[in-house]
Length: 331
Image (cartoon, rainbow, N blue to C red; front, side):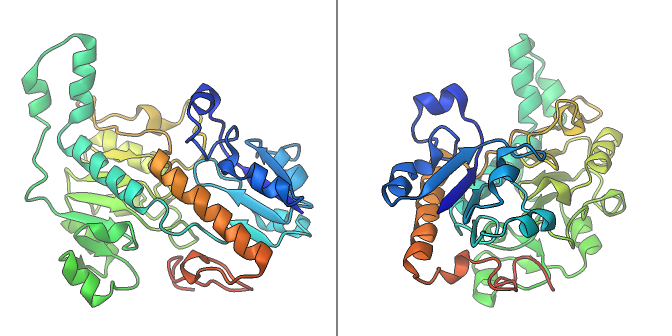
């Protein structure tokens, strides 16, 4: 059996840190296990174009492993070519919950970085400057602000105001004092901070666009750790440059193209005061702790498949011809 894994290159960091399991170099720590059972294990970061390892090996692979950090997109065209494919991990089956805490913590960090105007303050120190007033004029407390999340799954409902097509269970909503707003434009108009935590599908692609951004509070901050394509990259950059996002705010770690091109507008977008950009590479869900969890979960899913054991229901996105989760929208 051939198992194909599309992972990101770890370079020198992966060579010196074996806990970087989600890299090409460290291969999720499952090579010996798979090969000891006679299986072929192909690991690569080559995923773009007809000559990529992804497209070459998908034609006869039985299992595909890919991660959101360097995704190998299994398109309808590739599925027709993948005659032997039986299992997709993180595409059809996911290691559910492996990065919930990691991403939720990153969301809170990003919010505080923006609200407290941290990045320009640190850059000022690196330059050798010291002008407290230039930083303080755009620094606020998070206390008293309305924080909202688009999507209220395992990551999203750690916050307070939410927009989702499905309401949270009553007990969960009460536990975090979350209030649901059913109209998206009404929702964003009430929020000082909007965090995007929903999955990407045809109903959410380009959801945060120029029209929706008009309804944001003037002075709002926007954090996206879900999927980059949920936000219109040019509309967000324009809103930031115009000052409508209070000139303060877009931060996250997901990009509509990954790796992001060097000229991607989100790399350098600034507010009218020269700050407001907290973008980083897509790493919120791939901390060393998260990698240990999703490597272990990947092995468990494959082991279940090989032994004929049922998968854990929360790990299944797509089953036999249908979605097994409501997380991917109303269909």
